[in-house]
Image 1 (cartoon, each protein chain N blue to C red):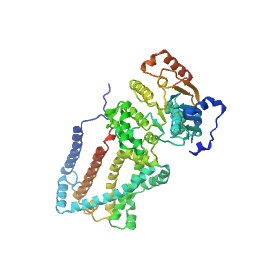
Image 2 (cartoon, rainbow over the protein chains, first blue to last red):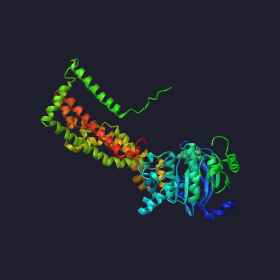
Image 3 (cartoon, rainbow over the protein chains, first blue to last red):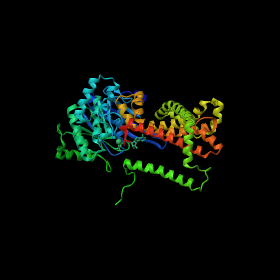
Image 4 (cartoon, rainbow over the protein chains, first blue to last red):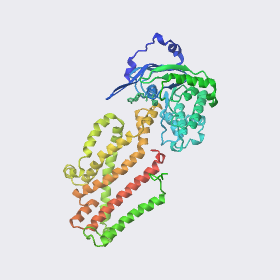
Amino acid sequence: MGLLKRKKTDFSVREEHIEANLANSIVYVRNLQKVYSSAKGSVTAVKDININVLENEFVSIVGPSGCGKSTLLRMIAGLETATDGQIVIRDRNIIGPGADRGMVFQSYTLFPWMTVGNNIKFGFKLRKMPKEQQEEIVNRYLKIIKLEKFKNSFPRELSGGMKQRVAIARALADSPEVLLMDEPFSALDPKTREDMQLLMRQIWQEEKPTVIFVTHDIEEAVFLSGKIYVLTSRPGIVKEEIPILLPYNRDLSLKDTEEFVKLRKQVNAFIEHGEI
Amino acid sequence: MIKIKIRKEISKRKYILFAVLSFLALLVAWLLASGSGAIKEIFLPRPGSVVTYYLESIKDGSLWINAKISIYRITLGFVYAVILGIPIGIMVGTFKKWEAVIRPLCEFIRYMPVPAFVPLIMVWVGIDESAKITVIFIGTFFQLVLMVADDARSVPDDLISAGYTLGSGTGNTIFKIIIPAMMPRLMETLRMMIGWAWTYLVSAELVAANTGLGYTILKSQRFLKTDAIFGGILLIGLLGLITDRIFAFLNKKLFSWAEGGR
Ligand SMILES: Nc1ncnc2c1ncn2[C@@H]1O[C@H](COP(=O)(O)OP(=O)(O)OP(=O)(O)O)[C@@H](O)[C@H]1O
Ligand SMILES: [Mg+2]
């Protein structure tokens, strides 16, 4: 953890555009590097990653399998320590996990012994929030994810899509400064997945969370995001930053428009051949 | 087309029926083997004489006295192992430093033959009740620590990570995530361990006792009272089965949230 501290913040000239935006930047990742060392040797998972996420921005990270997307997200979450570089959330150096960064995982991570309501309240209880306030926020988020009727259900009674909706609500209910999502919909069937994309977009339009969203699915990334970072493989480097200039109000019909298809192809072109 | 048979569910009634049948089959085999005269009574008693033995020892009160003292020993030995073993096991499964200190040691000790310790234990703690309790404790404790550690270790990393991102620190993560998440598996572990405890009870009583079910078996052996040997063995089996069922029942009642979710 200490290794992040020893690096002094140094702004080089090359990154003016990042610097210019720094005022309203929430997540600021600078020259980030991660090397996994093991008995078999060391793997550089990501190298020289520079990312800047503005307040209320929805940013996606796409790239081939194994390019270090999860590693990057986990470092921002503080679950993994960086080998080198710097992560700043507002004005704090990240040296460990905290409730200021919520995360939704690919696997189902609801606490199975708690009801849906208590899952969402988990963070509140840790912070000893007054009871009425807890109920109020829980009810509000259950409404947003359209699961009011399931407040007292246990996770095993929910479908995969419902579980992920609760996981999103649980992460958002803590009002994190940034919501990190690592392929949250990839275990779902195509239809549920599209429903989730639409819901996610609605949530973003209404609640305006700052989101960093990792996905394999370019269509999903284009549909949801305001900006996409394309990573290359081994070691993961930011290859391109693509602004997604699509209408603000989006529904699934957008996916058939010419603009959308063009953008999708544009992003696709930056990704190396082979499996994504 | 393939007919799916592997792990296919059967109705509860069918399950119970088959279970009862297997017990009946055993009883019939026993009746036939002992009744046909092919095997001498001294090697295999008739079920009738075992029943008679039970009736007699219930009448003179010895069955209850011996069962009571055995249950007492097993409960204490097991409770001590659990009180000490569960917290240590959780620490071993949670912190690598604890693992490094405790695991190799436990792996080593658990392969030592506990019955061989019995004479030594008598020297160390005397020949009273504490000796038997110690045997049961030693027999179960080291195994328990390792199994509890595995239970703690089996809590998915992502569940713990999710807790961290919700603001849960080390203490909260252990008490509010790891421990509740491992509960169903822990109950299964305890259920298995109580089985081991019954085995060690017999070891303890075979050597160092003048009461208890294990002792009864040993004494009967000296006089070749096969019916009493059988009676003792069957009773221990039955008591073991009852404790096992109690644990299974508790697990189902207390941790219904985990059903099928593992
Ligand atoms: N704990 C670890 N130890 C060693 N190497 C690791 C570890 N975690 C990840 N890696 C390596 O780091 C690289 C990036 O992994 P990461 O999981 O971040 O990729 P990803 O982009 O999320 O892949 P995917 O799209 O398949 O989820 C891979 O080459 C992987 O083998
Ligand atoms: Mg990944």
